Image (cartoon, rainbow, N blue to C red; front, side):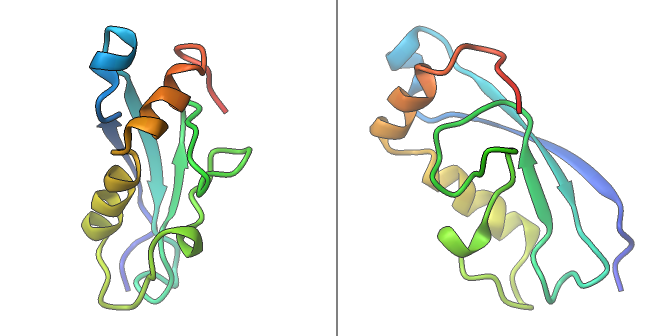
Length: 103
């Protein structure tokens, strides 16, 4: 079993430089629970984002964008999450959220 150690990661929104003149950095709080890797880690955005797979508390719902299995890795999930942020429509929606708004 992997210890339940909390991690923090950061990602930037795609294409946002063109949308609002700067690039936002998003902080992710990550914790792999005792059932990891059978169950996905808990991932929460600190800053508000306009993603359908993120709930009102900032929690990422894997079932809405990524099929988690025991062979999945945290890196795979983060890459898929970053890809979900790639469309220009998402960048524009995120740009409408006031900078530094948090969950």
